[in-house]
Image (cartoon, rainbow, N blue to C red):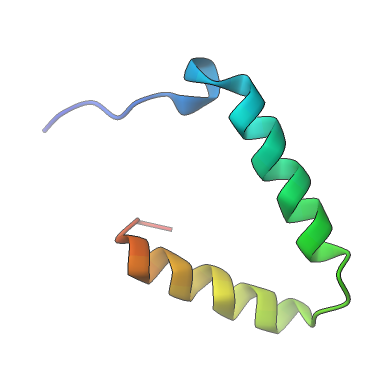
Length: 50
């Protein structure tokens, strides 16, 4: 099994952008349950372990 990349060290600006986007989504007025459903579905589509 290969080691996973530590992306927080590879590109800290990308992390900052992703966190800012998540804050924007959280403050958008959408219901938290809908945001969670979208997160899970996006993870399924991307094949990640989230």
